Length: 311
Image 1 (cartoon, rainbow, N blue to C red):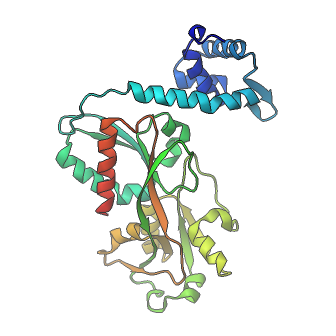
Image 2 (cartoon, one colour; image 1 turned 60 degrees about the horizontal axis):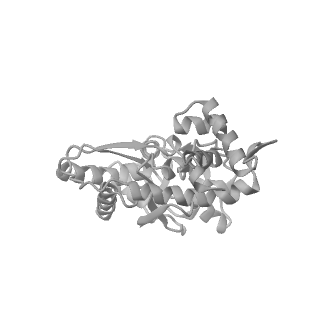
Image 3 (spheres, rainbow, N blue to C red; image 1 turned 30 degrees about the vertical axis):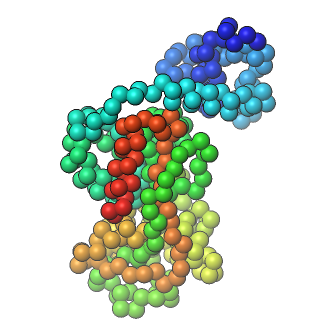
């Protein structure tokens, strides 16, 4: 195979096809027509003398040759993208750039206010486009469509850059007039009704099952280790909703301490330590290797980390 005869666009087609495993979705990613992508796949098959993608009972799947080519092509394209990044000086004071970040409700309610306050002073024309975990997926981050994702992550692709913003413990939020306040302990905690609040990772969420402890997260896993289980009355992915319900319906909200601390000065609430041990959690920011050397992105990462240190 003579590299001088290879259309380098085909390598981009191959990279997207292997990630999407669907001709129509790959075409949409590259903003080309479906017939054009189908023709690209045909040319790739001729170039490598391999089917590249084959139809299976669960959809299109890459061949062994394609799986071996995937990491090599991805590395080449990432290095090329980095080499072509503009080296124009970035001036935050005059820039009107839009930074797009995915932030969980936890991160949005604790970190983003500090970040926005800082940006308004040193970069008044910069705009933030804040998305939720269900708005994007790992491919969007990897492709640089989103500048950063801020959340608690169980697993991450090895290609991503990441930085821990903070570690956080857990607290229990109760209505100040709740009868539980005067007799709060493990026994009363287990007898009470609870609000489950969490959202980790990417993608559209699915319905929760109170009996499926393994999927309920840190609080319920910690309880299961001591042979106990709480009674969950409401499932929500929104911390503000959880806090409102804690007051309105006399429910206990067990949530990260930095989120609970937002109500520390509110006389309608009481914040207490959980009556059992819950492991700390980590809030991380992750970003694509495509953006790692971009001067504006480097500056933005520094601002996020600085804001996190003030929370």
